[in-house]
Length: 509
Image (cartoon, rainbow, N blue to C red; front, side, top):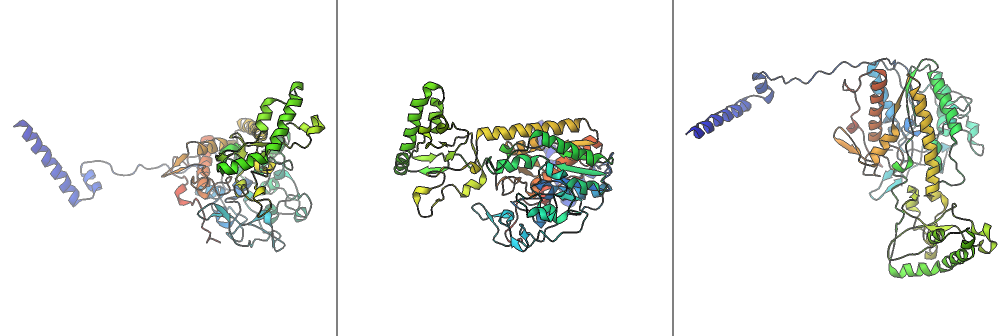
């Protein structure tokens, strides 16, 4: 009997509750029970100790909004620096002018003619990244009238940022070029420097992003090719120290970033070392083709190993074999022993080996591997019969050279930030690492560094998407809050990364 009374009691309460909901909004019902339904009131935005009235951004491609292999108008409008400027405007920030491109095609004209080194942007055609089939309309030599608060110059290395004359049009005609076409468009005069144009505006706040990035990326992008080089740490130290001293000379506060590791970027990790599928018959033909080379390696081992000049380990590394299934590409490796220098009898033996999982194949190789060096001749397949040249592969030795330089740059950056209370640091190296491992969640979105599908990295495998730049902008806001006492995060003034795309349609031109 007692059990039935309990059931009747709770049945009555449930009926009453749903009856109330049927006649009222849920908020009204909760209010009737004296439950506070108001959203918690956020604090008013405070700029802390920062004066945002004159914000100037200095850097290379990330600062400019470069994405998908090009600089174009929509990318610039969705740059993380422009996102920051919009947030700063809520706390006293002023004008933020950008040197906008003419179109959403990307690429540049040099005297009316397209330059293949500055081609249109990439788009995803359903299979992979391809260049937009369109002609650029932005003329390099049509200089713009500034001043510009976004001094982001794609391709600029650390020492370029302090070089007076980096925007001189005549410098584009020299070999090698001593000027940058993107800075030519915006420089205040032919003898200006990037940092000089920044401090001429008397900034109260600045961002200095990825200074040092191109000092290693230019070398890495071309597979450590001998025509490229990594900037030595002393040159970087001088350039970075000079830039920071100039930017802070008028009392401005700012945020700088460190430099990420290249192995956290999909440009260097998407193409596997073993992308060659073979059947047993084809593998046998290729093994026969390399029999003479492999025999020469064994002869060299027999002649030189006793002298300690050529090891069995290296001989095995240089032996090329194929089998049914997936096979590693054949590459040239300049780090292998020059056997001809030891004994002229082996001068004809090239420095060939097959790639391993420790090698990094650059993204651009994906459209080169498997093509024929001589069209129509299957015996000249690149990456199989014809080894990949240095420009397509980063060997472990080249990777170590890049890592050593990156670590040296970051040591300089972090030491200078630690000794200057007017500077804050965004740990871009850590951000890219997290994107390349577990991913990062912001709002309703989880981003990773996976090419095409990850949402954070654009189609060139190096630069961020607009949504990725939104994630980066929030990291800047967090650092500003922590160092200078502002409250962008606590007051709800963060970037909603869902407001920004992960890709641009080919119809956007």
